[in-house]
Image 1 (cartoon, one colour):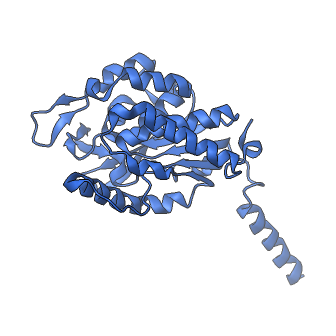
Image 2 (cartoon, helix red, strand yellow; image 1 turned 90 degrees about the vertical axis):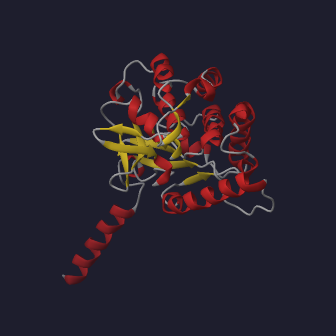
Image 3 (cartoon, helix red, strand yellow; image 1 turned 180 degrees about the vertical axis):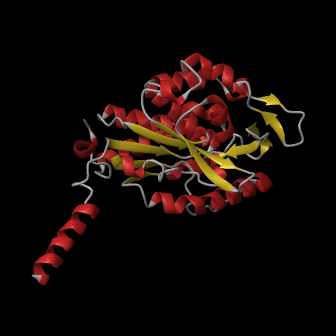
Length: 281
């Protein structure tokens, strides 16, 4: 009798840990990291996936990954997103800030967002979208997926020191990458397969271009530490090594960076590292 009971418990445990037995709302999800200009590579990643029939049904993102992610969740194709980002340049969306909390502000971004997203609310998005932010007051990361959208999206892109924080309900919000640069956990339980798109490859680097290069490398390595546990939650991880060749501020190289994301993803698909048959459809 005892043996039968133990066997039953064991089988139940197997059902709980076997992802193929659990019913998920979405077959494929994708989480998009921050990375400033390097985040343009996400557009190429999505394009390559689309060409092979892989269309994530749920998205999470932070910083530039949030911009690409929210446009995708709003129903824009990767090709359309490319056109939008080329049209709405970085310089168009920034303005000088007289506040001591940052050199620039991103308030002009709201004007651009209104062109491509019907209303300032998560509910109008065609696919569920989870936005990563950093709460400076409480020293923690937050995720938003409902309610007002635009101000929180702008906050997720506000790199501390460079951009002024966005104050909402007396809370100072800044770039989501500060606390979690790859918000995989927010959608892990909602999809059977989770793809991670990361644009801050932390591999070996032999040369640095002065103090700016050293600073970028240091920031990149620091942020990598909060990404590591989130990487483990992804079933497939896209992390182009060529991204090391681009600065956080290479906004003028948008088409080149998109191409890098596209080419690397195609290489992974051809090598069988992203199983098209399993993920497509």
